[in-house]
Length: 323
Image (cartoon, rainbow, N blue to C red; front, side, top):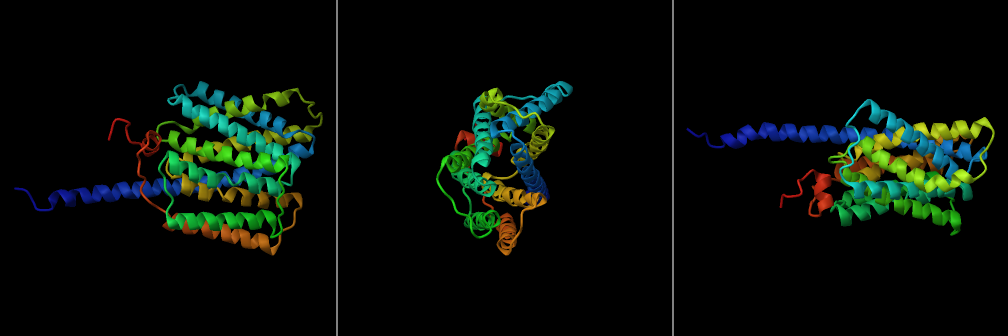
């Protein structure tokens, strides 16, 4: 005899368990993005040391990705089957846009103050949200949009100390294009992460970055140890940061992940304090504002995805043949 409501009663614990599992994955992804931000911030300071020692931005990029590729080839050799290039065009998008973004960011650091370059490069969350809206149908909620504005304002205060002035020269243009390219790259990551592992995605990025930086191999290289050591450290730290960030994009939408990545320039500035840079009240206020925006958006800024495009279905883990 059927029990009224029995089916729903039996399904409720399963639904609750599935929801708890998703929440655990999201919390893990947030922790990964926090760690990635700390590592990316450290890599920016190390890149600054390398360029101060006489290595140009293209050469730092070249060393960084050469180390990344060497490490990944070792991983693929030790673990056959790890390399899974299921979506060549999306992987090419990740590699091309990501490589251009990284190269232009390091070139910008050579030409303009590091704070200005990092601020303009960090417009990538805004471009990523706009692109994910069109490509992945990931619409930010009102709360998430407010949180992104709060976090971005915090970043401006941290990097500008309340008095940053922006111009429009070659360095600024490079940093802005770097931000746009970075937004396209992380949107590709989100589309890929449903069925492609972080190692494969990072390999595409490293190959793209190495290719765009190859022309700089013909420049004169420094002969002292410091820039080489700093550039090698950039390669190791940035590889760990990229793998951590890429793994996190499997559980979070682009708008929320972009919100968390506002921690990167804050971390970069705090790491730069080790180089003797001063900190003021505007910086303290910016850190607090950025953290407040991230917490606010993480708690309130959720909305189920309307997965209509093929890329959105891929990001959501929906088979392509389903209506």
